[in-house]
Amino acid sequence: MVGTVVSDFTTGFFTQAFDPTAAVELALDHARIGYAVYPEVRLDDALEVLARVTATAGFAAAEAIDVPDVAAPAPAADESPLDHSVFWHELQGWLPRETTVVAEAGTSFYGALDLRLPERSDLLGQPVWSSIGYTIPAMLGAGLARRDRRPVLIIGDGAAQLTVQELGQVFHHGLAPVILLIDNAGYTVERMIQSPEAVYQDIVPWNWRLIPAALGGARVRVLEATTAGELRSALDDAASAPEDAVFVRVQLPRDDAPRLLVELTRRLATRPTESVKELA
Image 1 (cartoon, rainbow, N blue to C red):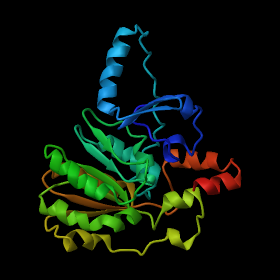
Image 2 (tube, rainbow, N blue to C red):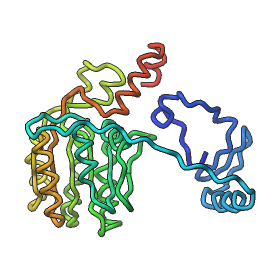
Image 3 (cartoon, rainbow, N blue to C red):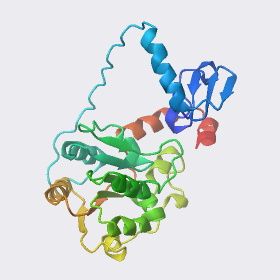
C-alpha cells in the first residue's frame, strides 16, 4: 500500500478483501511490514528504493487492466428534466483537454469517478476525510498554481454553503473556472447512506443566481440548467468564453444519485443494520 488511508469511503465501507496488517505499507513518514513499523522512512525515499528493487527483480510484465465503459444513457431530449445519469454523460462529452476537474465529496465525487478524463487532465478531491467545502479553496489553489488550466468544479449546494465566500478570492485573482453547482436541496449522499428523511439533511435554500455578484464576480456568466437542453447550452456557452468565469446552477432531483453511490448504498442495505449505523 502506497500512501493509502484505510477509511470507510476508500474501502467501500470496510468491505476490502485484504488484511492491512499483512501488507507492506509505505506512508508519508513511516513504513510498515506486517506489525513492524519503521519511523522516519519518508515516502519519496521509499518510492525511489522501491523503483530500484522492482527494476532488478525480474517481475513479469503486468497485463493491462481492461476497464469497461460505463453504459451511456440514450441521448436525452432537450426538454427532458436533468438527472445524474444525463448530467455526467453530458459532462463527459464536453470536458476539454488539460483540465483540472475538482469534485466535492459526496455525489459529486462519486459521479466524477465514472469519468474518463481527457488527455493531460487531473481529478482533485479528498474522499478520505470527506471534509465538505474543501473544493472551493482547493479550486482557488489549483487555478493559481496552473493558470494555463481552467478548473472545472462540481460541488453540491450543502458543501458550497460552507466555503462559498472563497469565490470572492477566485474572482479577485482573475480566474475563470467553470463552476457546476448541483442544487439538490441538501445532503443527498447522507440521505443515501442513512436517515433519508432527517431534517438535518436539509439546508436553507439560497438564491444562487445572486451569489457570484455578491462576492465580487462582476463578469461572471451565471446560468441555469434544469433540462438536458439547458445544460448543453450552458456548457457550450462556457466553452465559447474561456476567459470568463461561468457559474451554472444545475437542478437535480433531491433523491437522485450517481451510479457508484447507488451501487454502494445498495450493497450497504444488505449488511446488518447495526454495522451500517456504526459506519455512517
